[in-house]
Length: 222
Length: 82
Image (tube, each protein chain N blue to C red):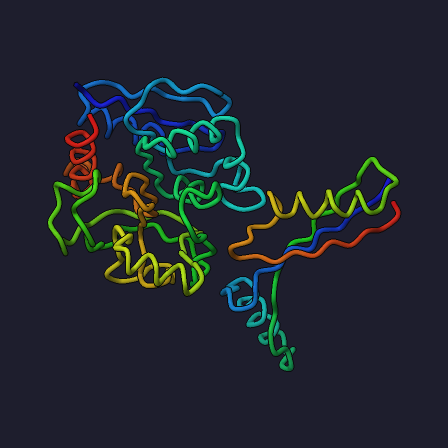
């Protein structure tokens, strides 16, 4: 079986094609592109929520898109156990729609940060990280103005205690609490992260450290 | 018609880098006694109703559901006659 992946496209998404290319590399077939107004999802193993500026970041990043018709289906699918990967603006969407706790606010330095950062792999027993080793360092690009992860003290303690931090920054670029770059939901099947693994899937892009994440997905979820 | 103003502010304790940057800029302009600046949003809703209680309840529901993010923001609602 090859991976059945879907990439949701919102007005203002700009990493949907990069995500589709990365998924096609590992799945052996093209993912389905899903328009934000669709109200029915095909059978999928993985839903990719891409980065970008959905609805121009109006109100709050991801706030309007989180209430678009397709997101009701994405939330319902996630609750049934379909894996959902949200990158950058996709991570905003996951917090705004309640699939992940906390919120992402303006970078502590106020600047839009666009460069490669080093991440530490915090755990490997999830559908996303089987190809990595515990503590491995990955070089993955970030490109965001609002990537500063914040949550109340109880939530942060729970995320840390339950091993739900997926990746941490080695050198925090945005002020995120506990250097958090990405988090899992309770089951490990929903992952939200600010860095862009889909922009690091071949050496020509500067790094292929993101490829392992997509290979892990294809291995586990297909 | 009733006008409802929804004021959305970051919760106390949530970092407000925009407010901090504005405070620094004010200090550069010579306004040296500004202790703190907090920045928020004002959302003005014109509602097709004359029932003040219903208007307030509706504005609060909108704020809880969409206009504010309860993880990081607080809101307040004020009614005005449009």
